[in-house]
Amino acid sequence: MYENKTLVCKDCGQEFIFTAGEQEFYAEKGFQNEPQRCKECRQAKKNAVKSQREYFTTTCAACGKEAKVPFQPSDDRPVYCSECFAAKKAEQE
Picture 1 (cartoon, rainbow, N blue to C red):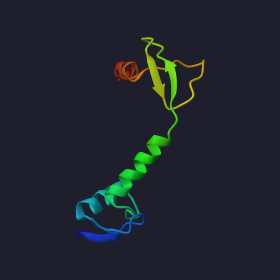
Picture 2 (picture 1 turned 60 degrees about the horizontal axis):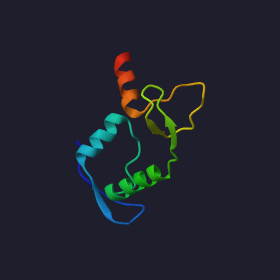
Picture 3 (picture 1 turned 120 degrees about the vertical axis):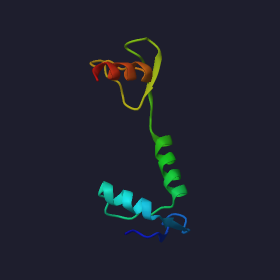
Picture 4 (picture 1 turned 60 degrees about the vertical axis):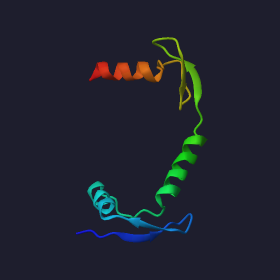
């Protein structure tokens, strides 16, 4: 049903293949638009966004270790390190 398509990356201008499998995945997810960037440029853009994210340092409410979180902690809610957060989440399931 789907066939490989050659597309041009809007960032670097290189051609890349939008495979039949990728097209099927896009259709299953309901995506309307084809990718505009090659895999390398998509990854570079993703990494650039991650590096721009500001992190805040706080103390874990459960174990007392230092925790870095991507939001400004407030005093009205407890903040957990990733290990304690995962443990609390597992308890709830």
